[in-house]
Amino acid sequence: MQDLAQSVQKLLGDLDALLVAHFYQKDEIIALAQITGDSLELARRASASPQNLIVFCGVGFMGESVKILAPQKEVIMPKLACCSMARMIDSSYFDQSMQMLQRLGIHDVLPITYINSSAGVKAKVGAMGGLVCTSANASKIFDYAQKKGQKIFFLPDRCLGMNLARAHNLKSALLGLDSPEQILRADVICYNGFCAVHQLFKPSDVAFFREKYPDILVVVHPECDPSVVELADFVGSTSQIIQFVRSLPLEQKVAVGTEFNLVKRLRAQNTYVLSSTLPECPTMNETTLGDLFEVLKAYKNHRAYNRIEVDTEVAKWAKVALDRMLELS
Ligand code: 13P
Ligand code: SF4
Image 1 (cartoon, rainbow, N blue to C red):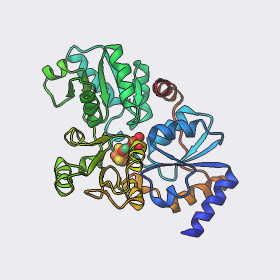
Image 2: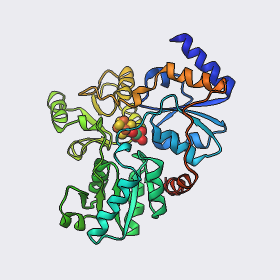
Image 3: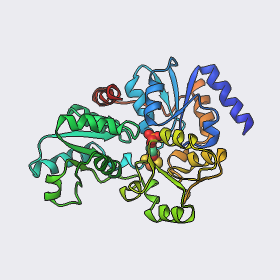
C-alpha cells in the first residue's frame, strides 16, 4: 500500500496533476489528495487551480462540474462512479416533469437543481433561467429564489427540497405523489429523488441516542429525511459538519448522520463521535488506490481513459446554471 501511494505521488508530480477528493472517499485516497472538500469547494477550487490536469476522486457529477466550469482543463476520474441520486433524473424525466406541471396549469417555475445531477439536467435548468445549488449554499439560493417570487421546482433530492422549504417557511409538495391541490398550493414543488445512504438515518436513531446520552448533539446532512432533520441540533454540508464537530469540546458527545468514511475520520480525533449505522456510499467507495494508480499510469503512457467530456451545447447551458450559483455563493 505504501509503495503504491509513493508511486501515485510520483506520477502526480511527473504529470503536474492536481488530486482532488470528496470527503466520502476512502482514507487511502484522502491521505494523498491536495484538495479535499464538499461539492461546492471542490468545484470552485479545482476549476480555479493552476494545474491543467485534474484527477477527481468522487462521483461523476463532481468531475463533470469541474470540466463544465473549466473546459480547457483535462479532467480524469479513476472510476466513473455515478451517484445513485443523480441517476434518478435525466433530461427526458426533466421534460416529463415540466409537462406534468403544465398540465396542472403551472407555467412559471424557477428550476433549482442540486449539483447531484447530470450535465444534461443542469443544462435544461440553465436554459430555463434556473440555477444549481449544493448543500453548502442551498439556503442562499433559496433566499434569491424567494425574492424572485416564482414557484420553485426543486430536483432531484426531495429531502433537501423539503428541508429547505421548511427552513424558509414555504409550503412544499412532491410531484407525482401529492394531490394536484397540494401541488398548486406549494411554493416548492419537489422531484421525488433521494439519497439511499442518508435514508438510513431514522428518527428512532435520534431517539435512541438522546435517551442514552441526554446531552448528546445530533448533526446531520440535509439529504436526511425531514423527520430526522427536524430533530437535529445542526444541519450542514460535509464541510460544515466537519467544522461544527471540530469546534466542539472533546468531551461533547455527538451523533453524526452522514457517510461513514467521513464519520470514521472524525471519530479518530474524538471517540465521542457516534454513528448509528454503517452508512457507506457504494459509489463513493468504488475508487481505490489501485484505480488511482492505473488511471495515472495510463495517462502518462498516452493511453488515457475515463476522461470527462461534455457535449458543447450541454456544457454551455450547464455552465450558465453553475455560474449563477457561484455568483450567489
Ligand atoms: P456535500 O456537498 O455536502 O459534500 O454533499 C455531497 C453529497 O453527495 C452528500 O451525499
Ligand atoms: Fe450520491 Fe448519496 Fe452517495 Fe452522496 S451519499 S454521492 S447523494 S449516493
